[in-house]
Amino acid sequence: MAITAPLMSLRDAEPVPTLLSRVRQELAAEFVPGRPIRLSRAPGRLDVMGGIAEYTGSLVCQYPLECALAVALQPREDRQLQIFSFNLYDEHKPFTFRMPLDALANHSAEVLRREFSEPGRRWAAYVAGCLFVLHEQKLIDLRNPTITGLNLAVLGTVPQGAGVSSSSALEVATMTNLLGHFGIADRVTPMQMAQWCASVAKRLVGLPGAMMGPVMSWLGESGAMFRMVCQPHEIQPSLRFPDGVHVIGINSNVRRDDGGQAYTRTRSAAFMAHRMILEQMRHMGQSMRRELTGDPMRGYLANLDPDDYKRFFRPNLPEFIAGRDFLDRYGTTIDPLTAVEPDANYSPLHAADHHVLEARRVRRFVDFLERAARDTGDRRTHLLDNAGHLMYASHQSYAMDAMLGSDECDLLVQLVRRRERDGLYGARITATGGGGTVAVLANRSDRASTAIHQIMDVYDKQTGHRPELLAGTSAGAWHIGSSLVS
Image (cartoon, rainbow, N blue to C red; front, side, top):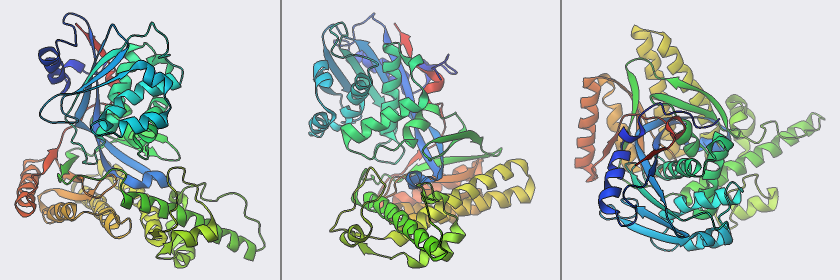
């Protein structure tokens, strides 16, 4: 699937025009006037339902936001890579990162990760890492002396640390630009591109490197919910919301801790539960004199029937277990991104409760929305209410079972729930939890909009955090590609 002709004007889609203006005004000494500049853009994403259940194989539903990351590229005459950030490192002034192309070509990912872990450099890893991966994949050869250096300038309107994938948007916008610059876009599939972006996050930044963020930022359709069954990545047709209904995000302005201990522990506990349930299945097979071969769940808790889980397996899962005890009895898990720590305590029961039941919640959520799109009147409202209540259930499970809740996000959800008569159907904490953004399913109406702004005012007064409304939608980077401007 190659990048095709743009479906929208890239130059008119913010923050592209702002970035281009600032490059010309503030970086004229580096970006040579009169020479072409290549532009690209990728949106942030709102996790509507699914969230962390991505790694246990659930259907996950995401929505492309209007806020985005933009990248401007111009070749240099030397062999230096220069990256200019207008607001990713310091919101008030540009910040510059420099690195020779030879360093990217000759150093390992481990060495580069240590370099990028130095203060003030982590943001640049997402940009330089894209070049590194393209070199590693042999799509370009950074050792070739005919390849010149690059100036790359980045500007974003995606809030950082809010759980709306600012880093994925930066990777995708950068990768889109580089593919256009080197003329190799037609040699890359969307899933390859997303995998390479995830590899950048994992290997050069040290984060889990999930796929959902880059896939959505690349392929998301404006105004539609992007759906993927994460086994590992089965893309489903996009879903349009019923007429007069949309989702918006409210950024609590409580910054999430990417890759934090709580997220890692919950993830490990989910895979520990998977290992324990598989062992129970084997014992059940032996008692019936049957040999169990393979994994009936096919490696994913999402494939376990929730009723079977409650009846046969949940009663035998420990609420808490020490990592050392698990390792002694079961060995390792199948998760390639986390390791069970001997001295840590885990809750396989709570993690399994969240993941098994969340997979069903997402499926039912989509079913209610699809049926609401076909119905009218009270029946339609009832279906939307049902979808919203599943969002509330997901939110509570994040706090009680996944243990990734946030007091501030709890308050926002409570405030939404009190205004259901104003056309607000449901709300939940998003992404990996621990703060960040709340997704809200609501009517497109003046009454609902007024209620949202009043909720934000109450939240501001009670917490001292000024929330940010994340409304609007825009197309993923694949739909608009990159463009050269003079």
